[in-house]
Amino acid sequence: MFCGVPKVYDRMYTGIANKVSSSGALRKILFQYAYNYKLANLEKGLPQENAAPLLDKLAFDKDVPCMQDFLVSGASF
Image (cartoon, rainbow, N blue to C red):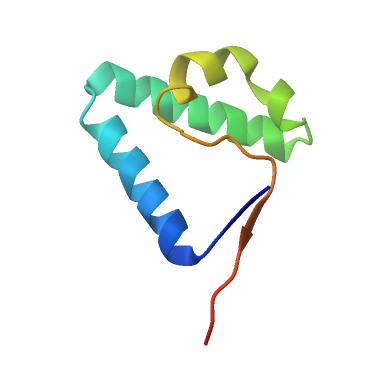
């Protein structure tokens, strides 16, 4: 489980997006394909570790620093 505020998640997203976009066209295409493939499998009900294990190693291992099953977000008003 990872707890954070929206600003933390925004910084993580921005960092990942910048890293992927600056790494070249082939890597960007691979990351987008892997993301869409894994998202589709997760929506089908597969657990995260079984959704795309090979693509996790190829596309997400270096770009996504924390692969968590559960993310909690909270903010004050």
